[in-house]
Image (tube, rainbow, N blue to C red):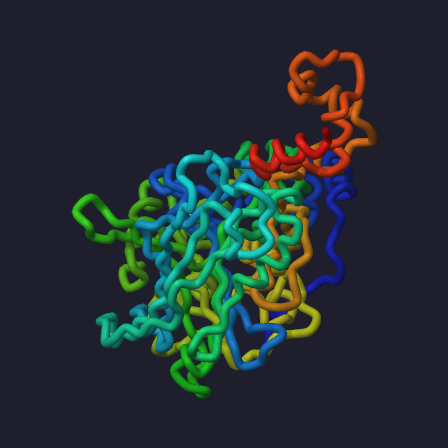
Amino acid sequence: MTPISRSGSGRRKLAALVCGALAAGGLAAAGTAALEPGVASASSHREAPLISGTPQYDNTDLYAFASPDKANTTTIVANWIPFEEPAGGPNFYQFADDAQYDLHIDNNGDALDDFIFRYTFSTQTKNKKTFLYNTGPVTSLTDPDLNITQSYDIDLIKLKKGKQQYKTRIADDIPAAPSNVGKASMPDYAKLRSQAIYKTSNGGATFAGQADDPFFADLRVFDLLYGGNLSEVGNDTLKGYNVNTIALQVPNDLIRQSKSRPTVGIYSTTQRKNAQGYYSQVSRLGNPLVNEVVNPQKDKDKFNASQPKDDAQFLKNVTEPEIPKLIEAIYKIKAPAEPRNDLVSVFLTGVKDLNTEQPYATPSEMLRLNTSIPATAHPKRLGVLDGDNAGFPNGRRLTDDVIDAALQVMEGELVGSKNDLGDAVDKNDKGFEKYFPYVAEPTSGSRGPLAKGTSSGTDVKNQLGDALQPAGSSSNGNTPLIAASAGAGALGILLIGGGLMWWRRMRERAY
């Protein structure tokens, strides 16, 4: 298999390029190679008007890749609920009970589903008379102090020419990992996560729960393309935010047509139940960036409700993309000639000799993964553009820098316009795990100043005033309550969700 070649050696550093370009009198004088920051944006975070108002149903990203630690399997990671603030309690982040979260597989290139893995969730509340998410430290997923829990089922739906043939339940009543409230509430979150990994009946594995958002990008692109002069670049504006993740690992032989036809198309959707009890599709995601910056406003909500077989209606958005025109208008870098048939192969059919079912492929928007290409021990962030055929656009790994790769392709990398465009954010703020589900643990709600500890009771008093002192006590020093509570960790439990009853018990012990 011949990789897509790439000229040039190392990547240019942002600071030097920006200074050099501005010193030379602007980007037009500096030339194409000087434009390091790019113009793409977060992958389907708040990408359409209607779905941006209902985050529980909003697909943020989709990944599909050869499992690095388990040969002959594919891992699919799909995320929902963008921009989860870790301290967003007491009503922390949950999957919707009235939704179907679907992972779709097309294994013959006809733009029709051959398999659907359907996740449905239910929420349980132990004590409805408290406002607390957890009423004490949580040490397991079955801990009675975990007041609000979620569980889910997985149905495997087999289809033929898009019509359902049968449905099989492959996982039943599986506990989801909770939101990471903080160290006082969840002293060993890694243990809770491990308990949420479940081996499925078909030889795979599943996980659902909160995770660090694996997408990395500078979202200040929306300020007229990074301020119009590259002054707003290089910050991962998704750093510190979480998402709700579904991860599924499946044997390749289950989902692909055959070893001789190894490519599968993958996309995710959300269906929401309406007042009449029927489900309707409200969100859809395959390749990154498509509904975010390729589709115009008039098509965004329509795309979220559509199916791949009908994607001919969006073809013009791909062959006549807006992004290169914006770059030309602002930075005077000439846009490649249209129609952009090179983008059709990346986004709609798969790339010849890499991940396409040509001549069978029906143009349709989804991730395409050649399951015969094994994982590489040393992934390159630009994937296929840098000679690494196990990466984007052959599926998408967590480490793939899809902003840079997609922007370079948009600006003509595949049609002779060599460039090193990017957004100056090259990796996630957290490292990914070596084993399933691979995504990093979520940032906890206790990430603020108190989470780092305080040097004395006086520090606590300065931050919280007299509110934690016993009635009738003086306000001029360290009261026994403050000293004892801070030493025992009960202050953190009170603030981060340990529960009022626990605090009262610790107070009684202090006296």
